[in-house]
Image (cartoon, rainbow, N blue to C red; front, side):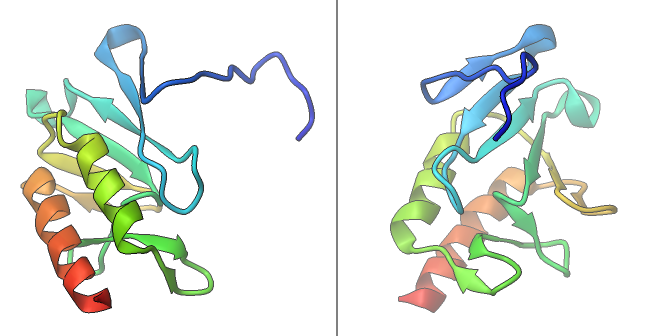
Length: 124
């Protein structure tokens, strides 16, 4: 990685940002994988911007957790449980995934929990 003053390294599990935003270190397909919690999102119901740490499934009712999406390598149980624990303290009803039109409009927090349970059952 090239050095640049735009890079700001941080430690810990969360990083409060201006406007009430919070970076949340979830781990996942790499140890420093983060999501962004936006409490004012979804008309004040909260939103989670997840990139590919928590990926929206095609049916828009579930999410998935992968070590490598291009190679279809799943995450292990411990990593999935860490992700779920990391986002648990935050209120969010909407989830924005990492690709265009990758939006779960409502019930996102419950979807993350039920998806993790389903996913862990499938890989066990």
